[in-house]
Length: 174
Figure (tube, rainbow, N blue to C red):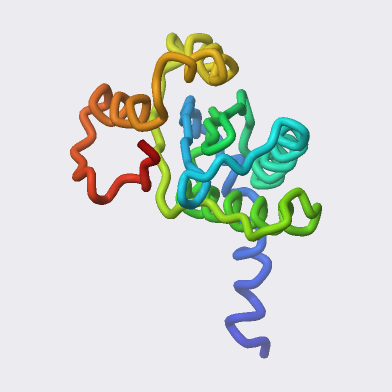
């Protein structure tokens, strides 16, 4: 007589393989993610930023999420993803940071160590805001001619009514 675990294995395998395609699960989740280079150093160089963005896009796609826009500045990045409801945002961001650190190191883009700062911002949007958010992300360099990252980030926190203590925010370069 087979053990119960052998009998249940095909059922468990079927359930795990089909959990992401269950009928009746519909969603529309758009999240803008923002995080900074450790110490807010201007380390993301124009000559390799596109390769970094492509690499991060690949991570997002490998995790079965959809990259909608990505861009940034030498000290921080923004990206907008279409997220499926089974995705754990903190796991995704952790994987992006960890893998992109290794990518930068392996590509030898810098002579010294690169790391992202701890923490990140995540801001949700409705479909009606979709094109404005993409435009905002894609025009980062123009936008930051008039506004610092600190002003931008605190503006997001206030606009989304997110309580915060400044001592727990990113390290700022004034």
